Structure formats: C-alpha cells, structure tokens
Length: 147
Image 1 (cartoon, rainbow, N blue to C red):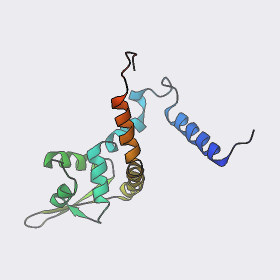
Image 2: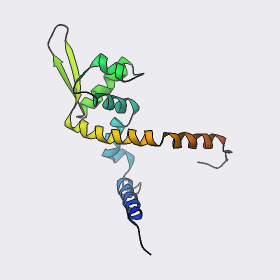
Image 3: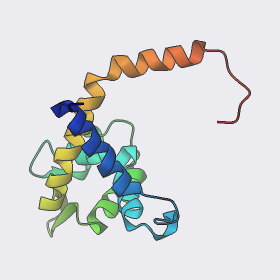
Image 4: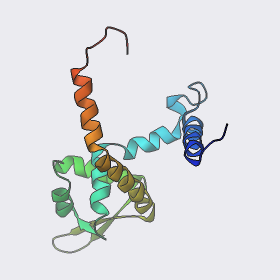
C-alpha cells in the first residue's frame, strides 16, 4: 500500500499532536508549563491586543483601546501587563507633561503575531464551515448520552 504526501503530512500532524499532549499521567495539567504559557496568550483580549499592536510600530494606550473593540480600560491594562510580564509587549514611558506611554511588540511578540495571523486567516477561511456546523448541531436531536 502506498502512502501519499498528504497522508504523510496528516500522520506527522497526528504524531506532533500526540507528542504535545501525550497521556494524561505523563503531563498532568498542573505540571504543564506549556498550558500556563498558552493560558496567557489564548484569551480573546490577548489575541486582539497582539493583533492590534502588530499593525503599527508603537501605539499609545487610548489608540490601542480604540483598536481593540469592546475592551474596557481596566481589561486592556490587565492584558498589557500580562503580555509585558511574559515578554511579548514592551512599554515605553516618556517623562513629559502629560506623560506619554507607548506599547509595541517585542521580537518574541512578533514571532507570536505570525502564528496568530495564521490562526486568524484559518478562522476567516473556514468561518462559513463553522457557522454551518453550528446550525447543524442546533438542529440535530439531542441525545441523553453523557458527552
């Protein structure tokens, strides 16, 4: 039996996923540093903030707030602090009157931005498929089996 290139790619992805997650006893959630790191970047406000910062070299706080639609001032502050703590965002403070603060992505943040752009592009490409699946799921009869 021959294996096509596409089959090989699928096997490679499956193998990589298995290596990432592995058996539960091998990687308990509380001991997994990757889970901790992804938790800091996987929420919607971090993703939208990183994508917004990726549009310009430097952004002031209020400009960034207007770019991240729906975020509160407090949530943006918390998100920026977390991203700064994790080395993704750099904060530049200028001792002027009034003080000026600008934010930008670090090289680490730029490398994360490229992956988030890929995720965004995937979501954009498959948006109709996801909406169709949601409609089918809502119309399907619900079983009483445990999920």
